[in-house]
Image 1 (tube, rainbow, N blue to C red):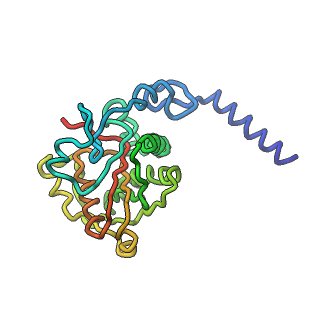
Image 2: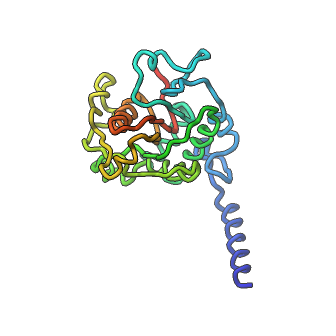
Length: 245
């Protein structure tokens, strides 16, 4: 009886709180029960578009690979994304990354999981690994946004998460502050596979989780590290993809 009374009390408090302090949509600011309202989700995140199956850049024609991937294949084999990195969706990622709104991470993971589940040719990786931050960047920010997204994503997809599968062994400049022609060199040999996990990587399919993919050099450098240690396939799972300019 006491437990039932307690549960009723909690439910009543939750209902009262929702009436007095309604949640706001992270995009439009309107009152809603979720982090993102239905109209915003449908307008900005509910649309499918043809994408290169390797790098997830938009395709204008019915094709499977873009010209860039046909000319210079990256180290990773497939990419899935939930949306283009463009207004207003970019605000969700900026609020998480620079505003420390960690409550947005489960929503972003859910959106990415839904995009993954829509892929007809989806092959589940054996392990998930977030893109690692260097010690200085992690200390400055206080969290790794890729890991915050990877945790709920791993639970939803029922794939083991190995947060320390890869290590960033060289502090690099933020890619956004590096000239496009210098971005690949900025990340050269920046990642290694943790020695204690090398056996798990050999012969496996690894999924790399990140918030945004722009030039693709970060994903390429990390995928190359896994391939050097014998990974047979590397897939990139990224919330948003910056369209080519």
